[in-house]
Image (cartoon, rainbow, N blue to C red; front, top):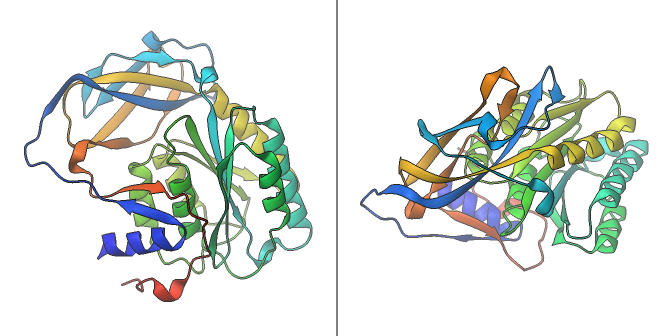
Length: 312
């Protein structure tokens, strides 16, 4: 039932679900599967720079791995903006939201791509990942706020946009209200985040959002939650997130001594107490995946809730 509901929602917001066959016999990896992990390191809430591969300890399902450090500067970014455009952002808040999006797009490098998802009581893919800044700016300018808030559904759809083949995937998710109209549950989105490479940063106006969902999602997805004092601080928050993401460490290791099929928990630590590391919770390996999801190339449409099975 859960797979059917998730597949239906994914299809209706312009995605396709691809199933893969399962194998019965578990195998053990011997340095054949390369795993990449984005890591945020802070100390006293400040980003720690200048670390080397030897400064990190990475365990895959409890087994210590040999770490290589990959330069993040050489990797293009895929930045997905997921914006709450419910009725509460009408007027000046919308102007501030557009300005923040424009500021972010202006800071991207030529090789970076960006996409735009909006959500109210509907979830809409405005633009898939593209390097065409003009298209993105036009899509941002055409947004009109209305209706209620479906931040849970919106976050799920945005993560699917970020499942790209190349580059580092960053999702910036803004909401200024409590979810009132999602069909998916928070736990379904958390499970999707566990199976995704997308790093999620949440942004909210302090005191307007119950931080439980955004806080938990960003923790699972290896990002962080930024709470701003007012909508006027959005541009600075978006740019701070982008700068922080570029400064993150990209660790790589080839799995060794662990079962290759199924869920792998990743534990990352910084040796010598030089900082606290945050990374995604883990990954799913091999053909034992229940479902794999990738964006389709077809234009997305607003979510038609009449065709989605009701929550039980």
